[in-house]
Amino acid sequence: MTVLLVALGAAFGAPLRYLADRAVQAAHDSVFPWGTFTVNIAGSFLLGLLAALPVNGDVMAFAGTGFCGALSTYSTFGYETFRLAEDGARSSALLNAAASVAAGLGAAYCGMVVAEALPAM
Image (tube, rainbow, N blue to C red; front, side, top):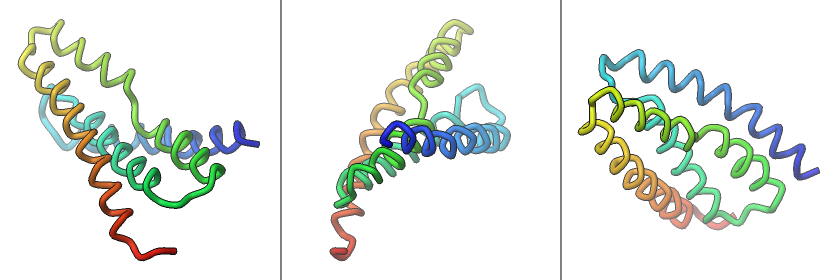
């Protein structure tokens, strides 16, 4: 059952990642991968929120592992960072790596803080 919940969550997260990534990137005339940056930060926030809420294993499998796992993307982050460096945009590559890690951790922390501020369910 857990595998099906993960797959179902991913079936929602992956298309959302693609659509959000394309929409954000289209709004920016930049080599910086704003779309991937945005979905990774959103996924980190949501996972931090879920981790701090009293959710059961099925909810975490669907929303945490499946949805957030498919919404955020480390492989695309790595690829885009490498491509920036390879194309001579080394400062953008370094900024992407540092900002993605810092913002992702910060977003997860903020998600946890928000969850803790919510009234008990």
